[in-house]
Length: 220
Image (cartoon, rainbow, N blue to C red; front, side, top):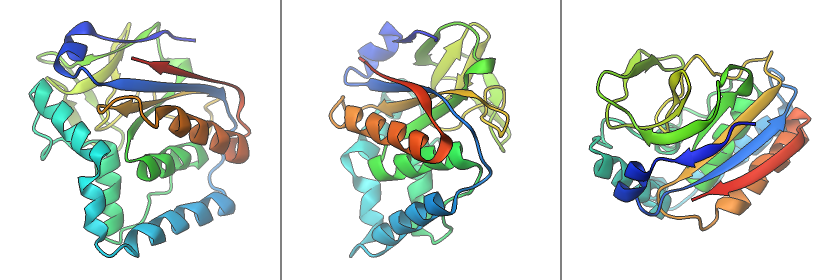
């Protein structure tokens, strides 16, 4: 399994950042009716709040925005995936449905307000570093155009960046053929609640994707 570290330069600019790493062997399915029910309940809970838009001002969302600003990236233009999902839900556009493992990650991200990277470990080469993107670095985001990675927080292996709290790359995306995954929960506001969020992710992997050999690590 890859070793996950936080680059000291990023840590200096974002001193409270902490990561939760979950690895597991999974069986990816197209969908799960029971998981879909959980996603619908999560949506309903948010939409029934007196002011659904208040979720966009949660401490974890605000911490992610502050982290982006500290690295030099405009959080209004480059949003963390948790905020993007929440904005989608409060606009009544519903969760996207991709496959069971991706859907689990999206559900936990909305529940916890934490952006989460998800990677097919068959295509991750060597260890992973969480660092700021460098000038000229790009990759094709999943279902997106080439993403300008300069000053964006990114996950990088021996072949270069492959993920970000904004959008992961096509290179390491999870498909129905994926067997071994890493999910990385990104908290710019410290490690409070990170262990329980990892445990929630691991539980859903077990319940809806036959997750086995699961491990959890908190990286500071």
